[in-house]
Amino acid sequence: MPATPDTLFRTLADPTRRAIFERLCRQGEQTVGALTARAGVSQPAVSKHLNILKQAGLVRDRHEGRQTHYSAQLRALAPLIDWTSKMTGFWQARFDDLEDLLKRMDQ
Amino acid sequence: MTNTAAAETEPRAVVVEREMAHPPEKIWRALTQPHLVAEWLMKGDFKPVVGHRFDLRADWGSVDCRVLVVEPNRTLSYTWSAHGLESVVTWTLTPTGAGTHLRMEQEGFRADQQQAYQGAKFGWPRFFAALEQVVARIE
Image 1: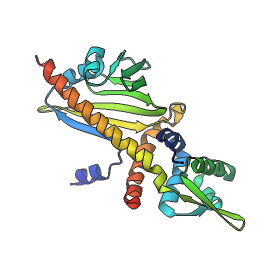
Image 2 (image 1 turned 45 degrees about the vertical axis):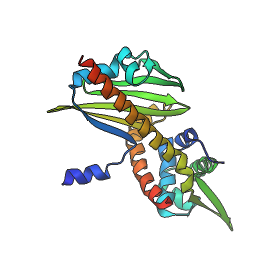
Image 3 (image 1 turned 30 degrees about the vertical axis):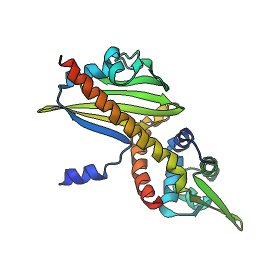
Image 4 (image 1 turned 180 degrees about the vertical axis):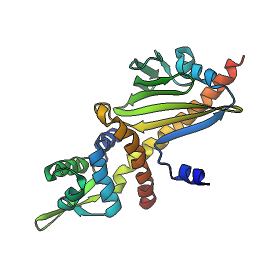
């Protein structure tokens, strides 16, 4: 089930979580251990962030032996991309109306 | 040339900019006086006072807002919360020879994390830059 834009916003609003997601986007699949080594927070904290990312559909996990590998699900970002293009359209229309108003304010 | 390159790589959230053939003072009035705001944006009880909370109402629903920055004729910033989505809208007015360069930027932001405001301010646009590369790979 795709996450709604507000779920994605809340999930990605946390800087540490966003950094973890960005790293998975850039560097591909990684283990919790590898992510923890560079996250600047404890492994339980990284696991918690990964779990929240997983619930939002932004990461997928794959078990291999004793290791769990995480990878970014780029398609999950689609609602966020839709939101930004919708908002851009909304503001462009508001700019048009503002310009009309400014002309009328001239009398 | 370096300026152009910097502008092209500058990370963006939702940004709309336009040259307006009107002075900043006049645009400021349109951005801040409720009866004028109602004509181009939405109806609401806006006051140019930091911390003031107001609603903007449209037929599709309402937006909860809180004023963050008021620098008359230059900068206006308020939170924009609609459909459970928290963001910050910032208006920047720059005088030009022919009028005003008007810029609107909407950034993602989590309201319950005040101390992270700077982090969000710089972190979110940078994230969108990363997103653009990601989107390029989706297609």
